[in-house]
Length: 408
Image 1 (cartoon, rainbow, N blue to C red):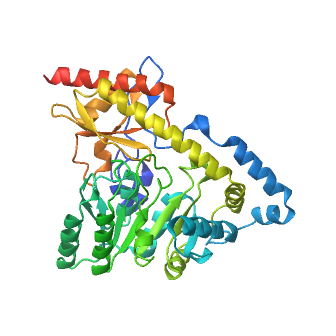
Image 2 (cartoon, rainbow, N blue to C red):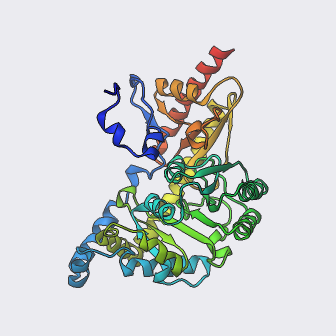
Image 3 (cartoon, rainbow, N blue to C red):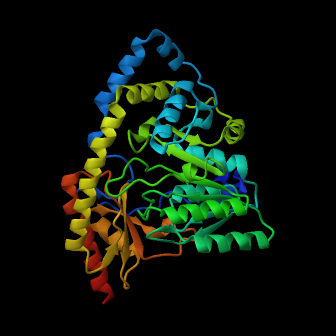
């Protein structure tokens, strides 16, 4: 009889499931002071649009036809009203023609990526990603039993010369490069925005190697400084790019509402891989009401200003408390600041010391494909209250000092 200390169900798990690591590491006992959270890349809970959502829901429930359809199944592609609103909204911003057939609604961009992976990846295929990248996306891609090839970034985004070399090596090895996954705007975790030249280079690489670009646009609409750049989808004329979007960042994560945007034939292929009953028509129609009455755009503009102030406050506090130990990115938008530690400390040591001081940060290794980089931490300014940022960064600086003093 096989002896094991593992739970009985372990032997029923798929090979892929057994290979994936736990989503969260075990944590130590909390400190005496209340924790200040710099880890969560989610909207500020004190500024969620409660009244706007209530008003939109009331308006929906007052319409006899809309409320009836909102409480029924919406189909695997999603309710038409929101898909048409997305086509009009994004088409107007990007200056391109879109229709409802260019969109499929999903349970957030996470489900969109899972659906894309299931539709296009076979075991043994290759996928190029930025390194580092969002750890949840790396897990989703790796869960398809494919080779994940990481390409470094600089302040202009993915190093496309290295991406081209990687694509050629994949082809020479006999493997098929299927997808190139990128977060071009306000990258998670690095915060950088891909330059226009790099965007064009990446489109050319994908076209030359017959691969699809998966453009994660989770932070689009959250620009504080600088000029918007055209999406990869718009630059490519829609060919060879699947763009994923979400309402989690500009409204609320609890909506669990996002979308895939692609040419109609690609959308049809994605719909064919939907085995659920589609996303919530109720939520979709409530968001339609917010888009039509202008409250979503008004809320987005308010949050952009709030996040800009938070970003500036965090950079100012970092300069005061952490400049001796680290340097950091200067994001033009989004939710994150990427901190690079000076030699003498590891990210896990700093994260642990900060926790002991009462500040929660994310050790950077979890964002790397091989988890082999130990000199970065990610800070999120989106969740924490503006007035708490100076104290949170003071605690982080105290943790850094403790680690570096011990190392000296």
